Length: 156
Picture 1: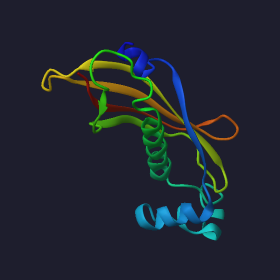
Picture 2 (picture 1 turned 120 degrees about the vertical axis):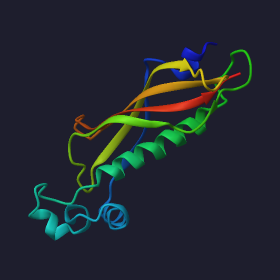
Picture 3 (picture 1 turned 60 degrees about the vertical axis):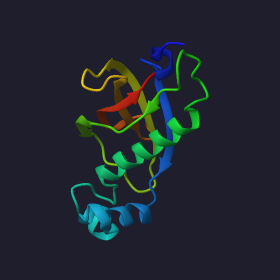
C-alpha cells in the first residue's frame, strides 16, 4: 500500500454529521464568541442573521472533533504498507478559512475532508506534510465552511 492510498488522496471522506442545538450554540458562544446572534435567541431575530446561529469558530471546532474521531477510528486498520503505521502529529495551521453560510440552530451539518497531497519535510527527516481540503455542508447541500488545513505525519 502506498501513502497516497493510505491518505485517500483525492477521495472525499465523510467525517460525520452534527445537529447544532440552541443550548450548545449559546454555551460555546458565551465562552468563545459572545456576539448576540450566537448567545440570545430573541436578540438574534433582529440581527443581520435573523435568528440564532452557531459561531463560525464553533463549526470549525466541530469539524476538528469529527476529523479526529474518524482518524482514530480508522488509524491502524488500513495500513498495509512497508514500515510502521504512519503517525499523525500536530497541525502547522490552516489558510483560506471561509464561513460561507450561517449555521442556524437545529441545522444538521455534515463534515468532510479530502486529502490533496503530501510532501517530505526537509527540516524533519521522516516527517511529511499532508494537506487537506476541509468542508462542511448543511441539510440542503450548501457549503457552510471551507478551509485548507495541514497535518504533520511521521512515516517510517
